[in-house]
Image (cartoon, rainbow, N blue to C red; front, side, top):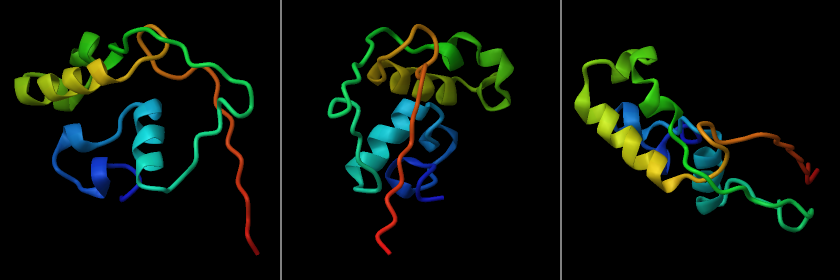
Length: 98
C-alpha cells in the first residue's frame, strides 16, 4: 500500500495515486524511484489533466460525493501532461544490485 497512496498513508479515496504521473512524482519524493526522463532525452508535455473529474459519473466513489470529487479535481490541477489523461509512453528500468 505504501506505493499506492500519497505519503504511503490511506486517507480516503482521494489519497490514492490514481494518475500514473502523480504516482511517479510521489514515489520519487519518497526515494522509491528515480525519474530519468531528461537524462534519456525525453521531454515533458504540458496540458491539464481532467479525466476523472470530467467523467466523475464513471467512478463509483465520485458519484454523489462532492468531497471526493473536489479532492480529485485539486489533485488534477497539480498534474500536467497530455490532455485528459496523464501518460502517453512509459518505460521502466530496474537495476538489481545483487
